[in-house]
Length: 411
Image (cartoon, rainbow, N blue to C red):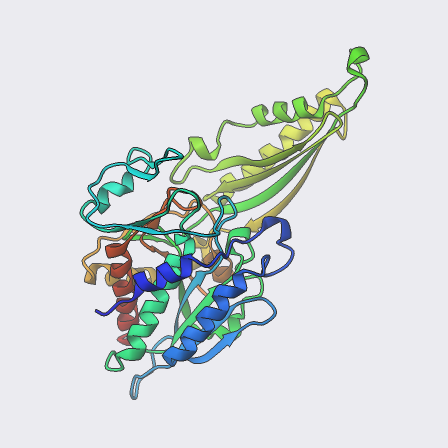
């Protein structure tokens, strides 16, 4: 198969598309995401895709590869990836480096700054021994989340458009902005997209696939203290910073660094303030809806109990649900999962079904009527300087996408 996935990936990661939580009331939250969107629009047009659209207002890109089946209808299948990268680490001036025939050992990314990717911290590297890796120079993230998915979908599209002998139904392609700040499908043209079923290509190691994610909520805890001169503060001062830490320690010690798999958590994501006022931002997650609701109740009850100690109104909570576990929708039509498993097996890849410990565009889409599991990209270490992508795995994922297309053509 003549896959250009690596060429695509190396081109895309050099475009800074970092989104911004601070500006997340606007989509796209950063204008620089449009640079990649416009490039993808041009490339899809040049490849000969049809109905190629660039959303001038919000930065989405859509395209269609029409069915070439004769006398038969097949479900229209969509493939979606997001263009933005996390703001956790800079995505500007990415300098990718290819390591051929990786020896399975720790990788020194930047000797001067002592930035090393340790196999002990990223054990999935053991599966990449003997393969070729794409890594950073340690100064930025790589952008595999989710430019690997973008590159794979584009390689799949080019292969289909240059090999008309491959039988397939209607293929719908969508690239979204702002997934990293929770707005990936805020203005997604679901009706215009035109798919009956879809897949986000936004996962991790080869073989990984997910059809369930967290139930998610965000909470803002405001702690109101009382400031007075520290020399005369006895029995008067209420230090909001110290009270905030008391709240943190009053919650169950179930945080991201202590949990895995199906275990939920409370995560204090930011904190700012002074003696008089402190504001903490939390995310609350669990795969099980009953446990999720219990977590939210524990959070609110903790604030109430502390108010009984320090006075009404000292702790206030604002809580908003973010998204729900897409399994509740997808398990009604599990054939869309079964088809991916078959596509992987045809490519010689053993499927590994696992829950997403995070969010995905597919969660909201599934509840809006477009069932949308998530599949792997061959990249790992997302949101950090140690991010890497495996070339052979990315090429294999393009094969898996083509197998999905072929399977649906025979449904």
